[in-house]
Image (cartoon, rainbow, N blue to C red; front, top):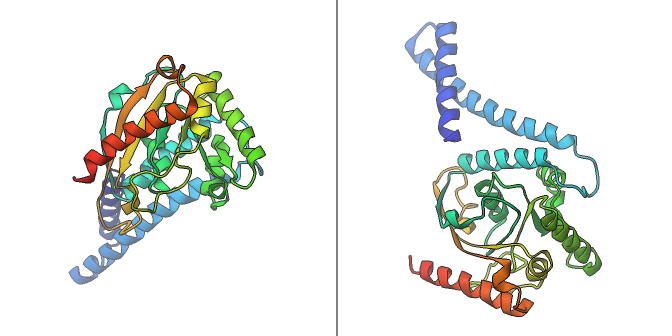
Length: 274
């Protein structure tokens, strides 16, 4: 939708500008109109990124230890615009299972850096942060916005820091500050395996916060980086189940991990042949 609006506005402004200039011939009118059309598109895109950059400049240096509703809204709006510009077409099922109130944990398979971006856009009405690798915080401009939101950055070489971030996530959930998203695989899956082995953090967080676990699976996000601006990219997102704390409270972390993994595998195996 955003892409269509930008194209229509650019076309309208190009026509209005050409009519105002009134070139001496039809040929010059067409050439000028095409150049203006392209120029207005570039200007709209530049304005969008300039606004994003300026907002990011107000985020203080270092790690932000509080959740920010303002920067979360900025992030949601930005991700939705980027998804539209990049031609991401979502096919969502099972979203009616998601709790309408209170905080919860979103767990998902991990195929691409776009995964948390898409989750954030889809769950946009819910306050949310993600547990993410620390390198994302260093991405120019984008890193400032997610830092400002209050993302929880993990460092595989620093278990103490990861334990601290896990404690922050549990506090976010228990105080109903915001939901937390995490990929139990811990990294993107570039293998032929449907799912990588799961890490413990997701399920320690669930057991200690006693919040519902929203189990999601993706298909297609790994293809978005190819032909980014020239093709429509179809992405499936299935909310397979919501596991309430009353269901898993008697399970060990390993049993809970296996339960979530089985639910993901069932849907992923079904979609493998599609």
